[in-house]
Length: 362
Ligand SMILES: Nc1ncnc2c1ncn2[C@@H]1O[C@H](COP(=O)(O)OP(=O)(O)OP(=O)(O)O)[C@@H](O)[C@H]1O
Ligand SMILES: CC(=O)N[C@H]1[C@@H]2OC[C@@H](O2)[C@@H](O)[C@@H]1O[C@H](C)C(=O)O
Image (cartoon, rainbow, N blue to C red; front, top):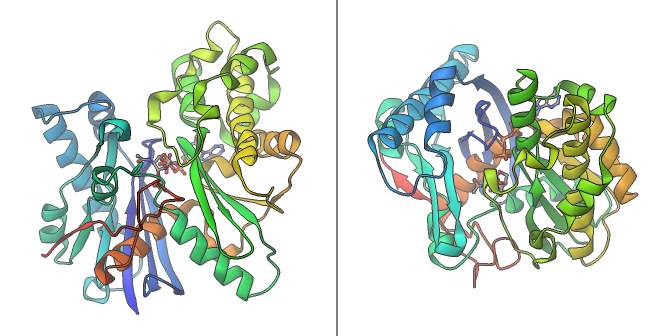
């Protein structure tokens, strides 16, 4: 068993999640401490400036440097909060970096962040660059979390009380789903926009970072004509596996609406895209389990239940919903070190199960 630390900086650009787990890359033995360190405006602005970049520039260098330093600071904060855990107790760090551009159809995906620098700064082996090998082999490069969702679900099934098939949702900036069948079959893909268009809408029109607890979207009226238009996007008829970049769906479906009606329409759009995902599954899931920050948006959660007619169940407490992605990159680091596959034909569309990640020694 390894003790690994996973680091995730997701598409919502809210901060770095750090989580420790004990695993051999197949089973999860224990969950360790975790924390979120929000980004300061300097890092967030530097990253926003380079979203969509496809070649290195002084701006991408700067964003990568600030981002990596913020990850080092988040790691230091975790050790400071947990003096019983020393750096030497961590066998490896899984460092996702920050996706700034994701164009798998051009075999291009770019996560900024300097794995070599982080390995030197922490004195620990770092596994980074998780998506490139998959994209180079013709896969979508995302989602990569499904194999970890599978391990979580297996543990919960063994513990009793969870019946298959289930669907584990991650609602971050973009939303993705992992369907797990009774025989362990995996099917995974990005369902559509998550919180990103809603966050952008509230930032631009309400000077708010996000729709806390779904309060603003709850107060508005959904514009169903715009939802109809949104659901006619070709993305929803593409067969999975499929993946998205943060800004593939922008907040312009809300243009001209009031703050609350725009928020209500965007929160419905996120849920309608999730409900539409059931059509691609071999069987409807018995329940949704929702991770990621969007799990706290009760409007989105209620909408998912209403549109899909499938209940959203509480995740087992040990999962720590906000930390699942960070835990996953620790798990993927362990798999990478053991040469186990990270992606599969049914999760990224890669032709055969494939390992990935690049190891940086300290
Ligand atoms: N209390 C809350 N109420 C409503 N929404 C919330 C709350 N807390 C967080 N969120 C939403 O969750 C988002 C952050 O989610 P998360 O950290 O899972 O995303 P991410 O990891 O950056 O994205 P991705 O999974 O796409 O890479 C915020 O931007 C916000 O929209
Ligand atoms: C290219 C990229 O970074 N994609 C992210 C993004 O955020 C959510 C969704 O889109 C998912 O496909 C993926 O992240 C998770 C962690 C994954 O790879 O499973």
